[in-house]
Length: 253
View 1 (cartoon, one colour):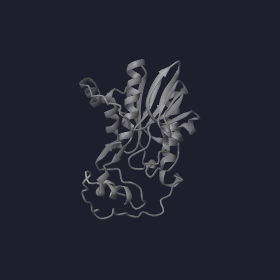
View 2 (spheres, one colour; view 1 turned 90 degrees about the vertical axis):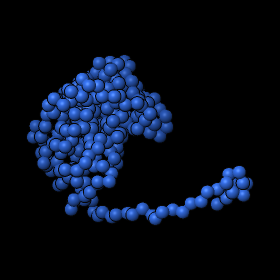
View 3 (spheres, rainbow, N blue to C red; view 1 turned 60 degrees about the horizontal axis):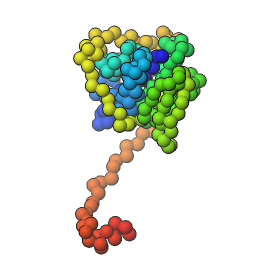
View 4 (cartoon, rainbow, N blue to C red; view 1 turned 30 degrees about the vertical axis):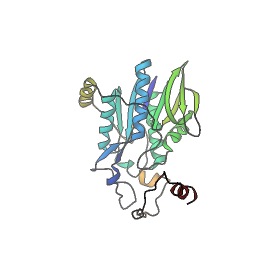
């Protein structure tokens, strides 16, 4: 089985800026790995270690996103692809999911595969890309997973979306992962060296067989941006919890 892990980078929280079209500026600024994607990657690598599955990392974005793909290889991913094209600038979550879906179709050839992704991104936080990928590929999806295993050609997924559930999901499928207590592995020297020398193929829309424009074809349109400033410093006081009157203040106020 081939596990396709969708990865992205986001601007550091204190560096998020927007262009005149209200799109986040991603080029030539400090980018950080999306924390939710880290758990999707780690779960994929755990299955690789246990069952010998292949792990393929993919990302869609500017050339700077190559860094997160090299990071995936340094952790143990087998190969990686970067979908990058000038026409993709301004793409919303729907276009992103559509392009990723078409590329996944191309590299899997409808053989047994699973798509792993973070539950949401730190910048957009729409949390709809994994669901849209499953819809586009017509495969089942499980959201907000915390861990996963494999048995009898099914994935056994623990999800905490609304309640704690353990689900058996047939292949192919799409799983999104939430932050969990799962301990992420330490990068080995061997994989670190491999990541530095690895060739990351740059995939254009033409190579996938798609013709679109991120700005024009994205159904999501930002009408206005408004800066919301946090309230001023809050006042506080220390209460003596050995004093019943002080405790009453907590209960009744």
